[in-house]
Image 1: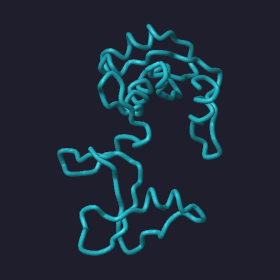
Image 2 (image 1 turned 45 degrees about the vertical axis):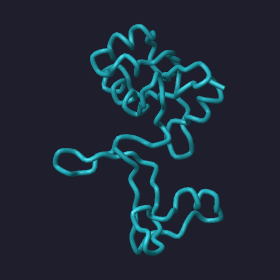
Image 3 (image 1 turned 30 degrees about the vertical axis):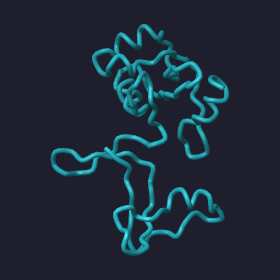
Image 4 (image 1 turned 60 degrees about the vertical axis):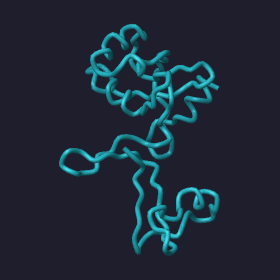
Length: 155
């Protein structure tokens, strides 16, 4: 598994009026030392399947280290979303308390969720806290607003 990077003649030169973000995402290709060649670091984690196809795993910024394991929060969200009664959920990591926090719109206890998840994910990936909300907040792009959840419930 690794980060998906893109290169080519039609690669953008950077982010508009954002030199810091440009410097972080548009970098020299580490596999090419003979001449300057920029690649774009997408932030997506991918892996090859047995047919040599790239398979999306999750976002790089959703990877945490918990109890000595590298965990993709997206894997936990996928497992939880596979439960029939769950429509929307989101996992964040509370590093101060060393807990995986699950946010969801359905009323279920941590014990109920973890009992159902034990067959789907390892114990070290089980949420340490469950927060049930009436409605998960969405950002301007229609995605779950993780920043708002973190500010309201974790920080």
